Image (cartoon, rainbow, N blue to C red; front, side, top):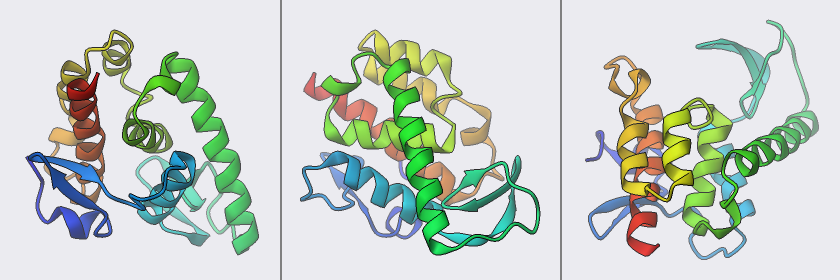
Length: 174
């Protein structure tokens, strides 16, 4: 199920549990929001000068919608991240009314997916999550053009696999 060398692609913060790839970022930390923030920051990386991505220009930890040439400080990058994270968490909670009852691993991966935009842009997957059909949601999530496109970077596909696998694990624990 993995795409290439998974440990390298997600900063060494993933392993297999029962044959399913899961995030192990800060695994001992019970505060899922801290873990989610650390994982998103690690995956996004910090850039203090605007960079071109697939849809425009971003800065900091993946803050989208800036002008080319924009520069920020470390403090501004952290502030933008906190604002973006809070906004994405609010969107996730609205899209998934049972968000608080999800496992911490799935909460982390849902936030990862909303931060990137791939999960928030998948209404069929969200509907299946809300119906408690996690295995079907996992399959639906990976049945999209970005994941199936051979030119999509392995690191993006691996992040998507973490989300799909967290959904599958949720199915076995709910």
